[in-house]
Structure formats: structure tokens, C-alpha cells
Length: 209
Image 1 (cartoon, rainbow, N blue to C red):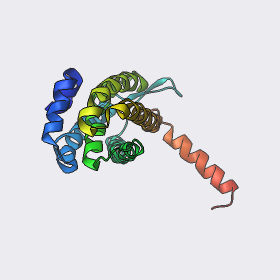
Image 2 (image 1 turned 90 degrees about the vertical axis):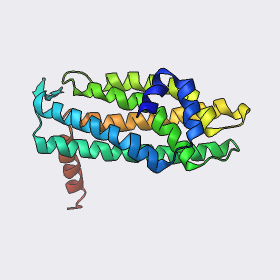
Image 3 (image 1 turned 120 degrees about the vertical axis):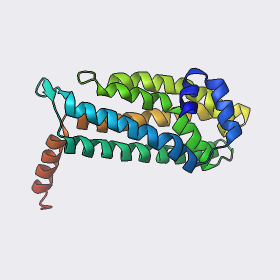
């Protein structure tokens, strides 16, 4: 987790260290990504129970039960892990379009550590009246800066292709991260129930049940 902090404050040095270490997917997952996501889930879940979350539809704070908070955080954790694994595969595939060969571990390192500002900024989700899009916006901008320094030493693209790989990979990660944030923000704002009711109504009209 120290490396994840270093890529934010000393990106050039930190990425060079990560390149030398050549970490595997399992090591990154167990030593950094999963512990960080569990810490975030515990902090945000506790805040949902004790502080609540602002609900725009009713214009008031809503306190979650411990069971609902745990269910939401578990879902968010699983979605985030899926997001990282899928995006790593996509970044690896993008590297192939630039006539470069990369391992999945290299792509996973870039995604997991490159998005560390986005993950750490999620700590601000504990504040009940703060829009989840504010820490997301700051986090994604910082992540783009971190990724700029991380793609060349980790992915080792040919110099003429490095900038293209960075831009295409960044565009992909921003779009995927925005989709993930939309889904989780939708849940935090209490719209899951209305969405489920709308879906049930639509399916009933289609005579699916």
C-alpha cells in the first residue's frame, strides 16, 4: 500500500520501483488492492449507519441499517474488483493494437496502481452531504496524471506508441470508472428500489411474469 501512496506523491520514482519489482497479480491483489477496498468498505459502511447519506429525492439524510450498509459495501467491493480485472484485460488488449506485447500482470499493475488516487479519494464518501461525484472527479484527474508516468516504465511500449497507448487506455479507464461511479452513486442516493420497481413494472407489461 506504500507504493500506492508513493505513485501519487512521487510518481516517477514509485513507478520505477514497481517496474523493478515486477509484481504479480496475486501479490498486488492481496497486499494492496483488497486490503484497501476492505478498509474503504468498513469506513463508508460505518458512516452510512451512523451518519447516513443525503437523499436528493426526499431532501434529507437517510441512515442505513447495518445489514443494508454491509450489502451495499459488499456489492461495491465486488464491482470494483471486477472493474479492475476487466480494465486490466482491456488495457492489455489495447497494447496489442500498438504492436506491443504485454503481460496481464503489467496491465494489472498499471490499472491497480494508476487508479490509486481514485480509490483513496473514496474515503470522502463518508461525508453524508458530499456528492460522490466530487471525490470521483478529483480522483480521476489525479489518476490521469499518475497513469501518464506509469504506462511507459510498466507497459514498455515502443516510444512512438507510448502516447497513443496512454490516451486510449486513459479514455477507457475514465469511461469504465464513470460507469462504476454512476452505479454506486445510484445506490447511495437510494434509487435502487425505484429502479427495481420500474424494471418489475416493465417486465410485467412484457408478460415475462
